[in-house]
Image: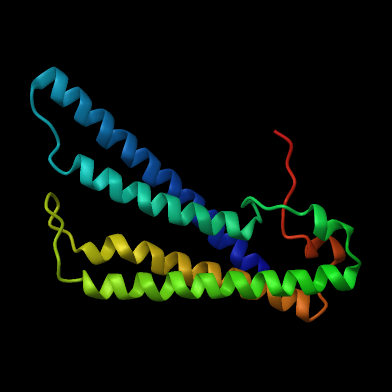
Length: 168
C-alpha cells in the first residue's frame, strides 16, 4: 500500500507541475497579449484561478502523505511510546473527522453546482468544487493507512510523531 501511495503522490507532483506550467503560460501570455497587442486570452484569469485551486488541493494531498503540514510536537516527543500512540490515534481520528466534513461539503457543492457554468470558459462549476472531493478521498485513504499502521503495531516509535522536522 505504501508503494501505491508513493506512486500516486509522484503522479500528483507531475500533475502539479503541469498545472503550474499552464498557469505560467496563461498568465504570461495574457500579459504579453494585453500590453503588446491590445488583446488577451479570454479564459486566462478563470482557468488560472481554477488551476491554482487544483494545484493547492493536490499539493495538500502530497503534504499529508509526507507529513509536511505544520505541527507542534514538543509535548508529544516527551511522552512515553504508549502516550505517543494515544495522541497519534486521537489526532488522526480528529483529522479524519475534519476530512469527512470537507469531503461531504465539497461533494454537496459539486452536486449543487454541476449544472452551473463558469462565465468565461463555460465549464461546469462542479469541476472547481470537485478538487475538494479528490482531496477528501485521497487524504482519507492516506490517514486511514497511517492509522492502520499504528493500530496494528506496524509503525515504529518515530512514526508516532506525525510531524517531519526540516531545517530551512
